[in-house]
Image (cartoon, rainbow, N blue to C red):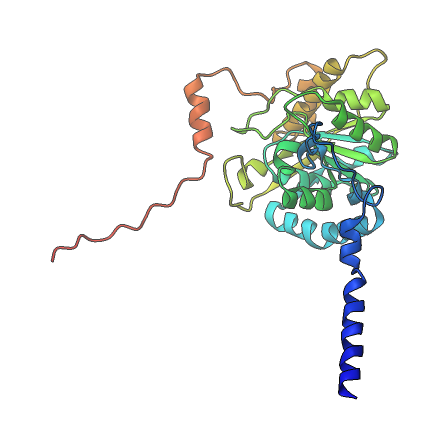
Length: 321
């Protein structure tokens, strides 16, 4: 009796061995259920990069990510900005009749600028906006890329060269009704002075037929300037200007110069008063955003003062034993 049971058990075990598992089936599957093999005489194509300018942030504009970003913006980012930057928002009355997608172009002093500007936007632009972010900084790792896309709805922009991929991605979103936040200087100011505006924002405005709203951000360089890792709470001023439209036949660089002059006028308005700033603008006497032509050593000295200074070890009394 026992020998018969043993034979049945051995037969069942052998049957189980003959039946392939799901892992074995998948492992032995061939094309089209898995990628085709490459012949030995053919050099395989290199894997395409998935970070940097080629990062696909489309998932951040799907409904679940949009809901998550709404709660992050209203529940965490806005209170954090309010406590850290204490923003004074001016010129919002200039945007009351603004409809449809818009390009918000601002000066750039700090990593805090994008969050401050997005949380300062009125409805409905605040939750229907994407940010143009440097591909070589915000999308150089999987963690930073995911966080930038989720929190800021950022898309990667290649600032090292003029690429059609970045421009097409931004233009497609503008055509779909999304507004855009961009910093035409292309990077943070190293010393608090403005840098020349590039033509990207102007080109997209002309291509997509949307207005540009100039914005001046003041005070973020005191909170988190370039070269510092720890923020210091301070007061900021966000000044919105009147929307600008490209003239018929206007070239992108000429329009970019007009945007830069408008931001400079807003800077003058924020540091003086509206009437005096408008008089200087009408007379063509608006102070430039760029630094005065001074010695190179003074610019280097100004930059060095913004860098984090290493903490020195506490001094001790000498051991006299």
